[in-house]
Length: 346
Image (cartoon, rainbow, N blue to C red; front, side, top):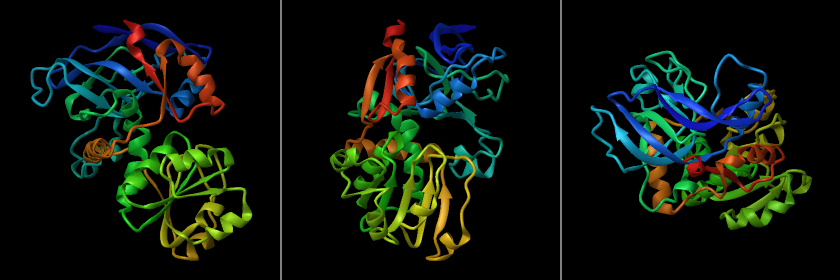
């Protein structure tokens, strides 16, 4: 069995440098040297949940870029030396209605996740990209467009595709009015993408301190969620509201921002919510969500970002500082995405 060096969850909710087992290269696999991997809030949650567990290895990391170092015998679309990007889905059944529609993220058999998933062929648990090498089925790797910074592009494969999916599914374009709730890892990319799509874009944040950042990112307006007068002035104004808040919260203030026949897409917090039917009824409003994206949408996102020079706002840290990144992420001390440089694992 192959091995690589990476960062695995220990028993005390920290990550420790370790030798990580990998399967052997298959005929339709790429071996990828992982150069940069984004730090997602879900990584932090997974490691915290793993505390005390000793029955399986947990290696986080599901938004990464790197270089192909080896290809399987059946691979025709990639060569050694190609720059690639990989997201949080690395396989699916390929035959259900969702997979045939190019929505592998909604695979009826559940997609294979980059880490914490189950390999469809040998039943082993998948280990993520906080490591120097990753083996991935070629269909779920994407050519990294020339000109996209590989460090800044890494978060596009999770945070980026998470907000791209509803923006495109809802047909956002010139003349539309979009509000982005929350200006963090998801929200700042939602702003950049919405602006590039031609929409009049407003940021809604609880912090006035982020107003300058919102405008730097291209937002046309800024609303403070605790400002009653400002929120009242925004009532029924927006065709689409993208809610990126990751903690439980009341949806009522944000549903009030949605205009006639508009949609609130909740992509940050995916737990149970309570909604008053009248908040939807008045204005024929819709509440929706989205999660990740299929292969066509992910490829389209990378192409769009290359054409519009969009990458994440990042802070790059050597991978040896991953526990520092987690501690700072927990207290929201990042603007707007940590990215690990895995070269220190050589």
